Amino acid sequence: MAVFSFEDRKPQIDQRAYIFHNATIIGDVRILGEVWVGPGAVIRGDYGTVIIGSGTAVEDNVVIHARPGKTTTIGERVTLGHSAVIHTATIGDSAVIGMHSTITDFAEVGEWAVVAENALVKTGQKVEQGTIVGGVPSKFIKSVDDEYKKLWGEYKNKYISFCKRYRENLIEFHQ
Image 1 (cartoon, rainbow, N blue to C red):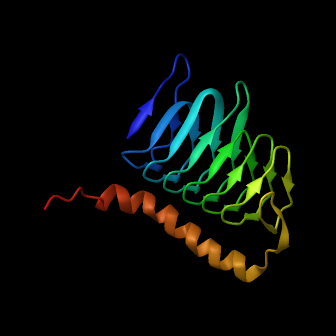
Image 2: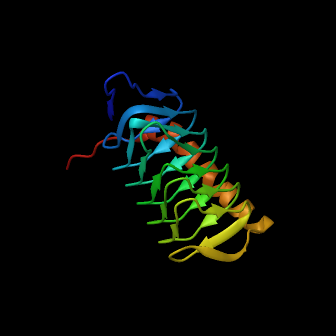
């Protein structure tokens, strides 16, 4: 894994987390327990701070950054879909950020909120807890129901289990 301190800014990574070998983590990045960081993800705390809560999945090619002196906060059990971009934003617990979505400066995504694939959450926009938004810019689609929470709870548990499973079973393959 490519983990770097930058000037006086050092990453803090819980030993229960799993960071894929070609993910990049720079500076003031705090990764709590059982966070899974996938291939190609880039998490930069070079002049801002990034905090990622326990049980979160940072899927392949996600980019997380923060403005100078500001913080990007990702809650617990969040799913950040492939190639999502999160910049100086706050993501609530159990939220789902769809593939290729962008969450921009000072936006807030509430607990159990869902941002659909390819959506744009604009600067300063607030996505209410338990709602699904989509589009460019994103707009309300519908509310999250209990069936959705149950299904995504199972997906989130799979990524949490990946931390241990990848550490114990991922072997580079040579033919």
